[in-house]
Length: 103
Image 1: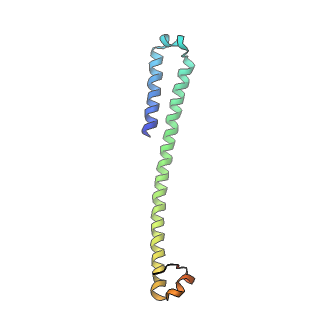
Image 2: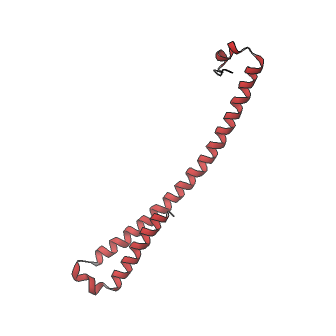
Image 3: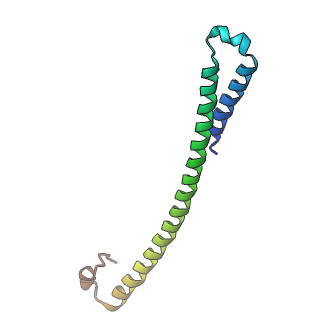
């Protein structure tokens, strides 16, 4: 869980709990049971969404790792094939074979 999310969710839950315990004292100032229930529901929803976000981050991280490995394999393969052209053909023919490099 993201530390920022975790801190905000915990603050909301602590506030809700404290206001519920002191409800008689804070109710004259406009604090209602509905607003406290809504605060708890929002904290629960934020927690659920953050868990989903963590799962998505893990998936992205995994996919990025796979893609990075594939890109490295591609780079190596390109280099190998370019070397075939460079070692066996005159530089004037490289561009027509897809090797735009110049020594």
